Image (cartoon, rainbow, N blue to C red; front, top):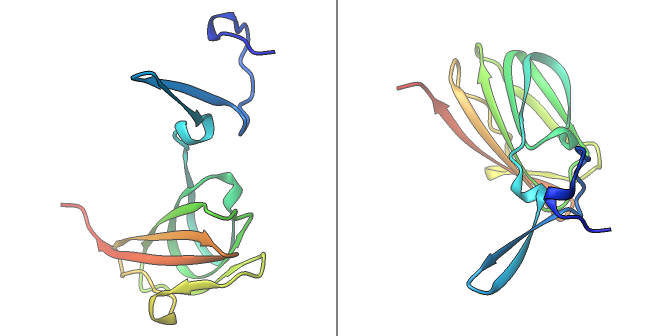
Length: 143
């Protein structure tokens, strides 16, 4: 049963089917609540060694490398985009990155980019055709 917002008496869990109707000049457009609500940033803290990242937890992640890492990504969905904000606390490498689904990870030049030493690095992953296209913007410093 559909209810007006003013008729709601308790907070309910949102679902992918929840929509917001926007009327503009007589045209109504429905937007999913999932597309409208800002997601939290997942701060994984200091990491080294083998790390597992559950992508169903969100789309924005922060990591501080305190050693070399091997990354295993799980629960990606077709069409999703992810941002990984990575700080290397030394001359550390991302030795490998895999999707637990078995899909490929595609990087420019066919090589996994390593973060700049003592700098922030932004990795953007986009899931397409069962794999992930990963790009890097590196060497960010405060101004």
